[in-house]
Amino acid sequence: MQCGGCTSLTSQYTRLEYLDKYDARFVLVTQGPIEEALAYQRRVGNTMTWYSTADSPFGADVGAPAGGGFAVNVFLRDGDTVYRTWNSSGRGTEQLSYTFALVDVLPYGRQEEWQDSPQGWPKSPTYSNWSSSQEIAARYGSQA
Image 1 (cartoon, one colour):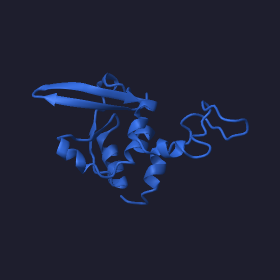
Image 2 (cartoon, one colour; image 1 turned 90 degrees about the horizontal axis):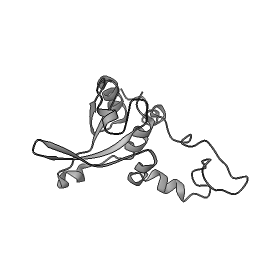
Image 3 (tube, helix red, strand yellow; image 1 turned 45 degrees about the horizontal axis):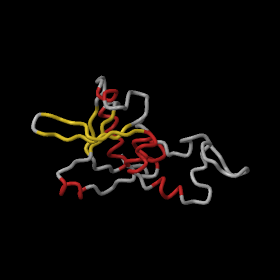
Image 4 (cartoon, one colour; image 1 turned 180 degrees about the vertical axis):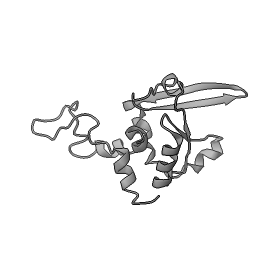
């Protein structure tokens, strides 16, 4: 099973070729087995490059420990030296998503417990309305 945060965020990206003009690449790094990640990639038709850091401390080193959520990192390679130039996780990644911008303009917004909403408005636990990786994959049908 893939990370719900990662799959929700990346399911919004279908065309990233424009990054080529900036000499930039968008890749996914999972802590799960690469075979599982690649099977999911094929199922949803994701064209990004996927890597696995299974049994490696890399995820924890960049703010996404196993079982601890996801993070978005930006790296710059200068010769043999790599710099992390930007990092965010959880709510901080929302600026990269159009989903929340759309949901936030709906009359009831995200409907999450933390919102200061009038009495009687719908409320649900934070993150509970996010799509799971299984729900996202199901939207793509029964592709192998």
